[in-house]
Image (cartoon, rainbow, N blue to C red; front, side, top):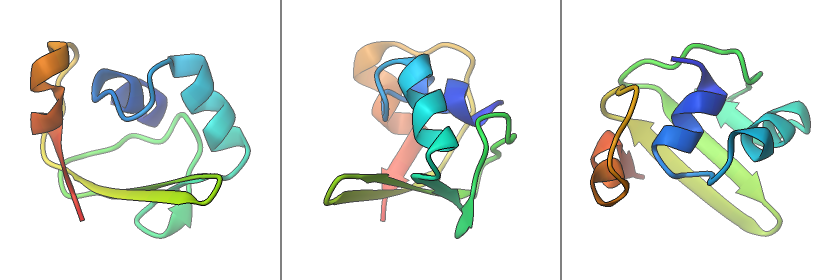
Length: 79
């Protein structure tokens, strides 16, 4: 699954255009490398999101095309 879509489905970032902008600005790292929105993520990848002075680091647990809002937290775990 594309990185921008995963960020939206997992509710880490609420909208896909915002996820695209964050990737273009170099604020998203996957496995300690700056990632483009088109990067394919897979279980086991570590995603780091840098917004302002807040850093969020998560590990991808599973990939799902659609997920309910209250169950979206099952797709990743915080590190």
